[in-house]
Image 1 (tube, helix red, strand yellow):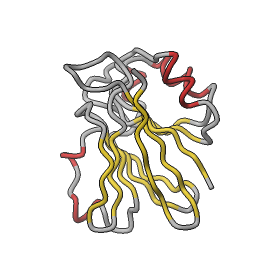
Image 2 (cartoon, one colour; image 1 turned 45 degrees about the horizontal axis):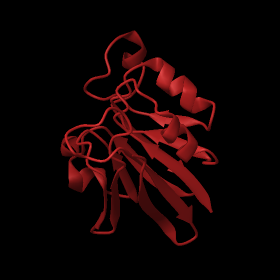
Image 3 (spheres, helix red, strand yellow; image 1 turned 60 degrees about the horizontal axis):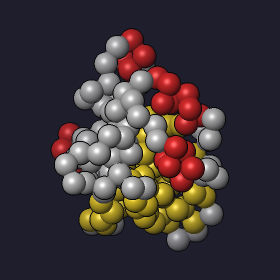
Length: 152
């Protein structure tokens, strides 16, 4: 079994609660709006980081990040994008088991037509009355499951 930490929309604020909640994961996926390169560096001290650029990630450091990423972790194909609305769902879900996205700041775990969609919510500055949260992707022999963890 593999435990992957999911984080998004830090906007330059990497809370100690988020770092503590990610301790022990084998990999971290950041779904964009990172804010600063220091956020990625701090997360790398916990586990290898796979990150995409969000609409608010600007500058030379951010241009080095892809807008979308397809990776395989624990035998599961995962697509990472900042805004799920940018997906061509039919084309982008072909052979993909999990889609991780951020942008809305709303934590969501839903399975549609066999594809697990996960938005870990926002781990950065609180927006409106939405929770501050991260997510976990648990990958095992039966595929992938996800859950959200509220931090504050």
